[in-house]
Length: 209
Image 1 (cartoon, rainbow, N blue to C red):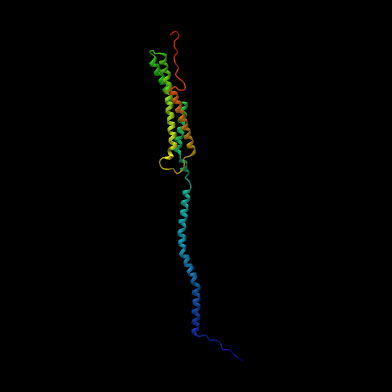
Image 2: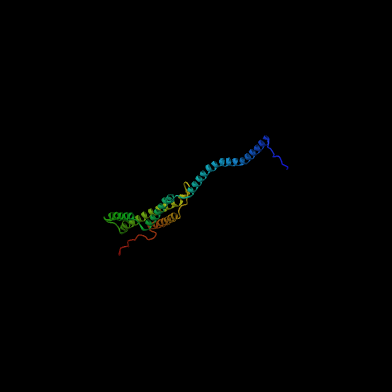
């Protein structure tokens, strides 16, 4: 009966096998270690840059959103001036209480002057003509004010620091209405003052004179 002697392992072969196994283990562990180190090295950078990106995005979004209070305040002064211009133009065409008071004063002064006697032409001029011209003058002043205020509102955006938003359309429309009423009031007042529309009445020559 043939028997094969068992292979014996020498101490040198055992040490060589252990060294080879240790090298394989180090080789397998090396990529994992370097990958983990790389992830740990890049993780803080990602975490540190992410909040900055979020903060920048938040600031940009806030800048893009208009402030409702700022939008409401925009054009308030110009709008008020435009409304004032239109109102002055209406007063210039319809007349104001100040014009009536001034006309009544001139009428009273004319009556006082002619109370001691005077010709009919003088009475017409002092009592009626002066009051008529005073009313036209007062209305003309209101018309000029309406014209000036409306023009200032329209040309204001061209001077000074440029505005962030254009002038509202309704402000320009009301200002244009004030300018138109002012021009019309100036023309009518000038015609009244210089008796272009109607001349003062004249006293007729007495019969048999």
